[in-house]
Image 1 (cartoon, rainbow, N blue to C red):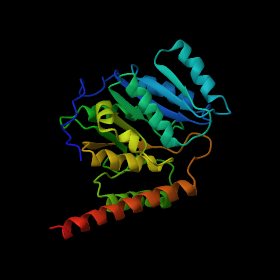
Image 2 (tube, rainbow, N blue to C red):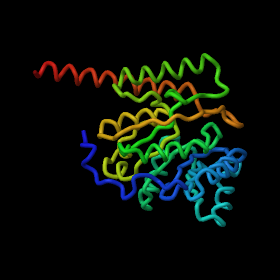
Image 3 (cartoon, rainbow, N blue to C red):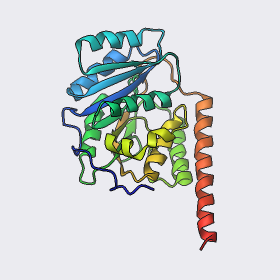
Length: 266
């Protein structure tokens, strides 16, 4: 495990209140209807923040729209990928792009309107806390967090899934599956955590939470409101849930095996 104080601190404690020093990575596939609204709201919430759209050759022209906006706005960038290659790889490529260009902080959020851009300042404020977190998770399941438009069954499944993650992986995080996050770039760079991602879908969030914690990251949570997507179809599938379940279970078994070896070695 990396000592959390072994990596050099970021020159800044947190992004500016206007989002300066921050780039927000937004993966897209057929989000032409929702992305313009999300971009407008992000720029209202954090006017100095940059946005990187990672588009998987959307047939509906999402990438082309982002390109046209970028031509007249230096805060907007677009990374085109040749095909639909998975949420995890989109985030990894976007974060690597940000690290190569010297941003101090990297956020991630969805393009479908389920994450409220108005919650981003909460993550920025929490990043500036006295404990200097390396990762701030926008959490639905801490005090002040909530969801809109979800059935009771969906809420129970999400909470149960996060409890299972905490049990298997030993992480204290209450919303390890959350997708709205703010990372300290110096930690991402110095820990090499992005090179250790194996998930392709939504399991990426859990894997990153576990991997960053294992490398000494200080992890904090800030309450957010999670809305039902504005339009289109959810990208969740049975295969994605299976991937996440298998990954978490393997991690739990590995953790138990490690604990057993330590006991035997005493």
